Length: 396
Image 1 (cartoon, rainbow, N blue to C red):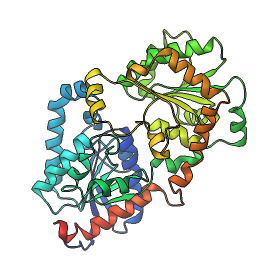
Image 2 (cartoon, rainbow, N blue to C red):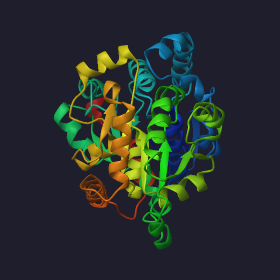
Image 3 (spheres, rainbow, N blue to C red):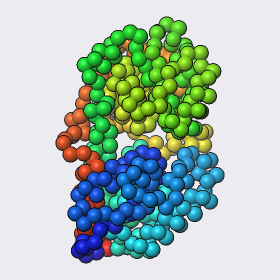
Image 4 (cartoon, rainbow, N blue to C red):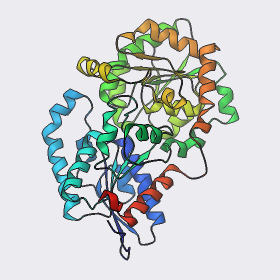
């Protein structure tokens, strides 16, 4: 496709399917608007963060959020309607660039249908699917309909080269833009060594995670509290506060619930240790220098499928980035109350396990190649280049 002479505002269509994607999309939109002299006209699907950046969403982003096989099946008719609606909107007014953020089950289908109907539209995928954990064939499967992939993790470009995936640029994880909020002051660092230790309780950000982990977390904390004094803090989202209150009601030892972002970050900066659901939060804790025990439990059917497809020795994001299994992970039947309590006790105390985690976390700045340019700015540069130049001639 030939380069476009931009004498009008650049047209960017963005699709995000969950809260993390909405955060990425909002930051990218702001970076694009700040670097496009001709202006940017945004359209697509997103949440509140993208709305504040200037997007009027086609429909509520929450319509696309479905976790687990059973949840997807229950919402399949609505998701299929939203898929058609999204593709129709892209084709009705072709953008200069289509940016698909996270939510691979939905966004990859959008990409494939748009590419088949209009091969001239450049397509950028923001966030690689976890091909380095399972279903590695997805890398090569993306290549026909993704022109460029924006990677959050430094090892992902090499992974996609090896697997035959699309051209990939490492732009950096959005958490890198918040290091100043995650790293402790001298006073907060001193609190990490004070008594009683502040321990974070993080049972997840999705309803199914909380309901599957809540009881084990509560009884493990009660077991440990018999021999270890702790100041327990549970940061959560406002929309989950009611569910969290119900979940912890039977717990013999109850944490303080905080819902404000500032309170959450203050707790991260002062925490001695954390008990967390496996997910992005493990990287957030690692960047903040908080040793943790990670746990996760999924449905029986998903577990059977996952065991056959899983690649590598760890599913924990922090371990994958560090390249070493420094964070203990308790999954499925290995997640028991006694083991959970014992693992948490060993990272609260000054033990070799705690020291090993801290040493691994100290390497993250070098691993991420943290510089002065924010990830959203790096991502915007790639998107603008593709929008202005169009798809490479060989790919058209």
